[in-house]
Structures are given as structure tokens and as C-alpha cells.
Image (cartoon, rainbow, N blue to C red):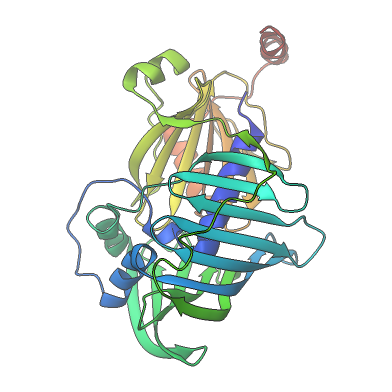
Length: 360
């Protein structure tokens, strides 16, 4: 069955990237024609690989109309080999730390010294030649002069042409290109995430060259995610993947497996927002906890709001599909209906699916 942990991990990873402001500089794609990029936007893309700094951020993410999760994040960044993010939640949540050292990424509880380790993302390099043109096609970019923390800055607003995904507002330091403040608002205008530096200090490159990973950590390797070949996909799904009709402006950037399956993850991008489709064999959908059913003329779809993200879950032609992305509920429901939805299963079908899951 689709692991709810996979969806939660995807959402958690996206939040980490939003905090570090690297979600803007990650993906694989092919070039397309677009208007020239504003210079401050190119500065943002290049800053992570060129600028060393340290500071402290406040991060707030809304999970509904009234609930918000807030953290202080202490940052050390020394490209290309060292980044440390120490999260101190302003609430009951546990503290946690992320360290990226070379090609290794660690996530752990700094008090319990337990966590996970895996390969760090290395997908920023081709953003400028590949994903940036899509961003410029799908978003209108407006710039204005600004100032923050006593520093000259440029304010960027990236407003979606399709109006069904978040608007991003960035305050970019003119000297370095580092994003000093970031806001993401949903299609209805409500704030979804805010990240802002409270303290920011430029450092010389190499200032954390001698940094080491803390001793005494008890880390569990994360199950590796690897690119899936056509043969892998046929083996896991028993045939080619479903033709998912994703919203306009999104392009497939890769297909992946966690371990040997049984779920195929397909990643799509519009240049800024990411959409993930999880697909597995099955005829009976297993609704994620907390989702609500929506009846359609073809069959049921389960929907769940995850902050700025929406999750839709349904069955189609012997497959169970879950789509998660920073896209409005109506847009993802329409994408599911264009793809095709199986009718509600009979009691016998549910019983058979339950028995199949019991048999290893």
C-alpha cells in the first residue's frame, strides 16, 4: 500500500527546502523559451554556491486557518561543503538539526542524538539552464527596491499565471543574492509560509572548513531513492504508468523508486512549484488518514489539505494514485477526473484487497 510516511516525508522535505530557500534552485528539466530572468532572480540561484554566511531565521508555516508551526532556525553556510540548520520549535515539537556535509545529509535530534542519514540533494546545478525558463513562463515576476536588516535589497514577487498555486514574495539582499525574507501565499491570498532572517552576517568562504559532524550520533540510513528505468516501472506496476493529466504548466522531471518499490514516484515541476504523483498496483484506494471523500460522477476521490499543499487520492485502471502539490483543490480534482477515476469498489473487492495485503 502507499506509505503515508512517503507523503509526510515529501512534505517535510519541501518545508526544509523552503526554510533554507533552496526550493527555488532545484529540479531537472529541459530548456524552453522564456523572457530574460531579472538579475536579482539569477543572484538567488547562484548565491547558495558562492556566498558564505551565518544567521538566525524565524520560520512560520500555517497548517490551517488558525494553526501555525513556528521555529527559530540557526544557520551556518559555507559552500560548497558545509551547511548546518538547527531548528528550535516555538512550541511542543522536538528540536532537530540538519547537516549537509559534502554529499551526506544528516537529520537528527540534538538532545537524543538519534536520526537518519542519506545522500544530500545535488540537483541545483542545472536550474539556470533548465527549470528557470519554465518559471518565467508560468510566473509573472515584478521587482521593486526595498531594505531589510539595514541592507539594500530588491523585492521580488512571483505571481502564478494559472492562479491555482502559491504566490512567492522574496526580499533579496543586493550585495549577496541571499534571500533575507520569503513569503508564500495560497491562491486565496492567505499566508502559508513566512521565513525571515532576524540576524544575518556575511562570512569568508572557508570559515567552517574545519567543522565536523557531532560524535555519538545514532543514525539510521534512509532508504535510498533512485531514478527508475522503464523496466523498473513495468516490473513494479505490471505495465506502463498511468497517463496522469497534471495541471497546465507542469512538466515531468523524473521517475523514482524508494528501494525496489512497490510505489513509483513521478516528479513534475512548473519551474517553482513541485507536484508528486505516487502510483502503485491496486484496485481499492486506501484513503490517507485525515482525508475527506469527494463524490464525482465517475467515482470517489479523497482530498486532504496539507498547508499550502493539496493531496488527492483515487483509483484508476488497476492502480491507486496519490497526487500531492502546491496546487488548489479544484485544480487537482480536475486533474484526477481528466486522468480517470474508478467507480466505488464492491464489498467483495475490498475484502479481496484486504486479504492480498495480509499475504506477504
